[in-house]
Length: 442
Image (cartoon, rainbow, N blue to C red; front, top):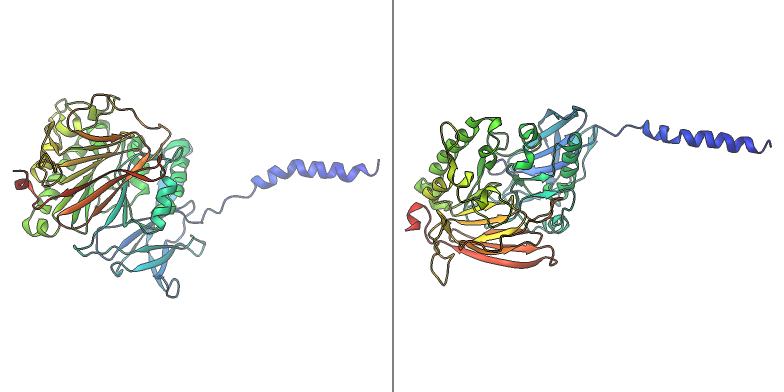
């Protein structure tokens, strides 16, 4: 039986093995969740990432094709403490690269001497008003059932897009499992967002702990913790805002009025003749639509939608956004929230204002709305009301996302990609406008 001893010793040792494995902590100084955003200043780009211990915040970068990492930029890290019961700590690092050459390609990595990310590449945004930027846009993309993700990863890395617009609702939900779901989502989109600016707005799924995961993880222009801001690209002025101020009044009614005043001022500025001449397209993005024909009793299915007409039950009453956007000649309004795709005829006040019968989108007499919230999440897609109103032009329950190109000062092209149909383009329109602004409606 002497032969048995080593075996028994081995068994004891193996039974301890799981404990030995657990004893190795993760490398908490390793950068992860790398993503880019455009700070709104020509020749610049912000790199944001996460570590779980405090480290320096450095980006080393260089022209693609040259010697790697010849330039260095420094930034800083902010401690984010999640409000879940574990009170998890993470450091969100932000470094702004400046003096970038428009349209030049760069390679970069981020981190510190305690750990570096993979090397990624990006093209600095072209700041010419003659530039024709291409976007992918969608909302409501989660960790589970992220149906459109693989196609977006590949197309982004192929260089098909200059920027991504994520119109609210991330991860489902970023705060869950003590914000580990948020971490996982940011890792999941790294293969898109580390290559092109990933521009966002808040949705209802970000609301927990007063939107703290959203406000801490993203880095948008302006000083509003990414809640509302505007930026320019090509011949477009793009405005991102929060529809959620109309619903989560517990976080402060003053936010609603503050945003409204900001929107008014921003639209006024964009409409100054010298500004509108070079950037005639005004495009808005917000999560919950003013109009939709889904059968789920959401705000947009109601005639008196809060976002569209405001709220009468607050003191003072809260103004809606339809009149404001119409008054300042907003051309195109992008929305999500409904897990479907819907294109509307030019619409204002529940009435259709087509340019003409033959060419509804040529010199339309009201803003054009697109609802695109079917990128894919655990809540699956929504159903449509079988009897849509006459402002509904095209709708699909396929999973997918929208592509947009601001071609020049008169033409914008939009198309809808169905992921269910292997990337087939199932809808497309040209919006053509020879003049912009309030006077263009008449």
